[in-house]
Image (cartoon, rainbow, N blue to C red; front, side):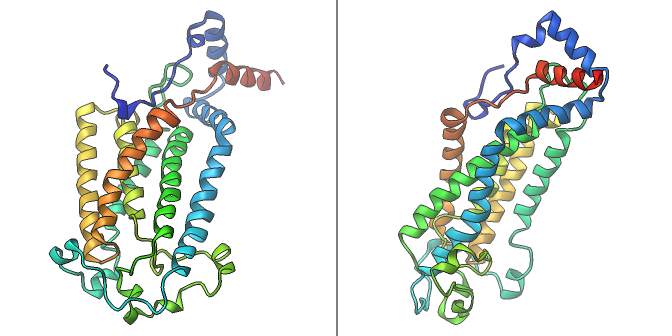
Length: 306
């Protein structure tokens, strides 16, 4: 099988798996476990090896993005706020959603369907693991979470550098003069560091779309891991990715129709996110960590002997 550069992170298989003594040890350990419990041991091994990266990503996404970055963007917004939006070709072409439609979950419906697809894929990682302890082609939950969260965390950090550098007039109704955005704006610089921001009331974080950064990353995750997770053919996985890409395009149109972003914000997200994904996969973290099956087997045998 030819290796696709976008699918570079593959599970590495150690030659130790085929060592006669280790094979006997692993087989003995497997006799004390179901395939699911063994799989959970593999995940625990990978979590212990990568927990610090997961914690850093969580810190950036939960505290950095949802607290500091968004609040600073809102705090830096010029007061009094702009009366009208910047001239934008997407806003000129795409009709504006009515307030009643915008206030529903319609705008985020495509993104929620894509998130649901990812959730299903993550469940399938633990289904039908008949090759537990052997050359398991299925990716591991911890590895998928690390790769996806790392790309989104880096993306949001770079995104913050962009929208904090230049504050532009808001595109949403609630960020214009008639929307009275001051009621949600942090009252002091100190508040930016301890108050959780509401992304649906926030202003100033425009360049580029965080919704599309996340949504496109999820599609790229499924593109890379879906085939081996669902145990489907490459062609079938391409169909899945094609449908999810169509949902992402619909999400883009709805973002513009709701006036949540300018056209430049969504255009940048569409080319920035795949480039970041490619760079992370080929330069920063090209291969997923593999569980040490021999070490897991020794731990299991040691517990059984006790």
